[in-house]
Image 1 (cartoon, rainbow, N blue to C red):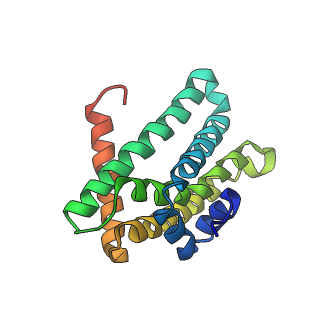
Image 2: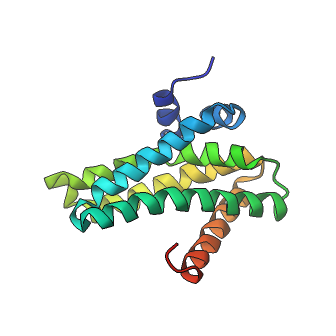
Image 3: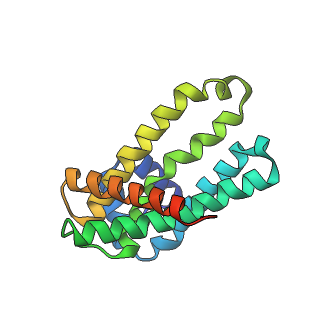
Length: 168
């Protein structure tokens, strides 16, 4: 029996491999993974409140577009360079849930904790990075090293794309 949306988010955030395997194989979890990405985008928008409405839209939109493109690039690299066996949907589902800890970015809005963002931000980034590598590893069925490299190369390719395509 499939776990609930919240249980899957908690499972991904706690780096539970079984959760990643479950969402990888459950095609109906694609909508849930998109829901996680949407929640993260909303959290980014809320954390960008001081940037005004345009900054909030950019934060949310950037998250939505960025995750989709990054997943597609990582899928391509993982399957072509590292002989991973996955569909784009499997990569999107596992990465979507792997982003679950990023919802915590909203704590930057809290008066006392928000002042500690410079300490919390690197911790959150490492947490999400580890979660994403596990998700990519499970989706592509490759080693942790190959998953980390595919994720890194995907991120670099996406960053270059953002620099080359104005407005992206």
